[in-house]
Amino acid sequence: MKKTLILTSLMLLLAIFIVACGNENGNNQSNNSTSNNTLDNKASTDDTRIYTDVAGNEVEIPVHPERVITTQYLDALLALDIKPVGASSHVLDNHYLGDLQEGVEDIGHPFDIEKVLSLEPDLIIVSTEEEVEELSKIAPTIVVPWMYGDVYDQFREIAQIVGKEQKAEDWIVALEEKAAEGRAHLTIAEEDIVTIYMTHDKDVLRIYGGRNIGHIIYRLLELTPPDFIQAKFDEDPEFNDFVYDDISMEMLPEYAGDHIIMLTYDNETIAEGGMFYQVEQSALWQGLDAVQNDQFYVIDAEPWFSYSPLAIEAALDEAIELLSE
Image (tube, rainbow, N blue to C red; front, side, top):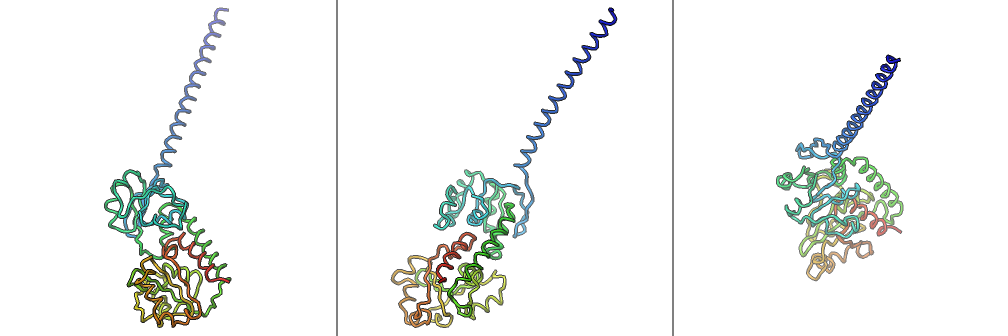
């Protein structure tokens, strides 16, 4: 009887010991799991990768940047559904972006280093090598030169930097589809020649190619340029080099097409003594067929002049409305 009691007691103690060990192991597993989750979460926010920018610089950047600053590419980032914490004054100085840029801090132009520091960026995207030296001391800094490729090349590069490649491709496809639909409503005949001029201040008169305004008119809407511009396109099919030529007022008739689009860059150019004022008052301008046939269109710089995705989309909408039935 006594042996049975002792054996029962020993078995009871052993059972208690096993349960206690099991609970301890369970607690350890739970703690390890929590610890691993914490590490995984930290890794997901702290993950970086090496990015080689178009200038050949290798930069370690966050995989998922959360506080981006840009000195130039505000428009492109917004088109990718990324709102920077800061951007330069000159890209914030617009109306076409409206509420999309609300909350983006002005870092000045040129940038105020103290302002940039205060915004605690984890990624900075700039357009000149000169900006990299100082800003890279604050956060990883990538340069996308302003004359790198065309607007699509720049947009795709920005998308790669922030991991939004498919978003950029989808956006470009949608823009091209909108342009194709708009072309069906244009009143301008396919063979009609369209010339793009720009006036600026008191002494600048230019004829434009396939960038800026030309991207909307010649590339998206596929309207016919004058022979001089077409020859430029043939020499530069990627639209990387030729942007515009400065011309004299005496050259207006030489390049004028059946339709003329005249961009007035600023208030100075339309005021008395300004370049557009001089052009408009001249016999050369008044004698052009496009002017006499009321087939000229005067447009403002914004959004037509900004060579960036959302600006081009806004200008395309205006162009379709302006040139349609």
